[in-house]
Length: 116
Image (cartoon, rainbow, N blue to C red; front, side, top):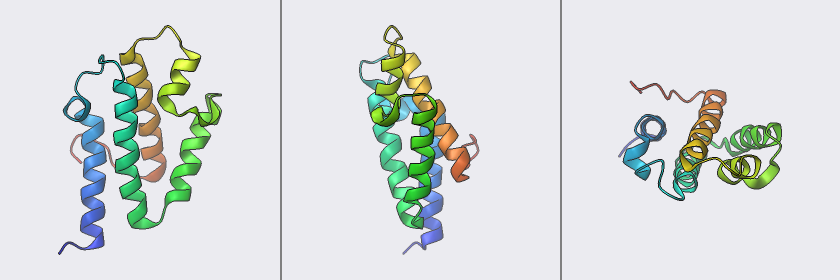
């Protein structure tokens, strides 16, 4: 059986893979709803990651601080982006979702480099 540290390493690697191999997880960034799917995949992976360490509050503080800074409160990354950019395409929404989660991962200390 894997140790907690080994499971955490697997969760961290999966998060890095989502960043670096996004298409493998959600398909085309231009597909309708791709940003919502991407955000959901990140939420699930991060839920697993922070649950292992009991760091949910830290994660949530980072997430909601980003939402507040962009002035879309609890809408979340995809809907918040669309609210502020109603004419933007799905790929732009996906890029915003990726940037938001990249910022969270930096704050949490998750290595998302391609080598991770």
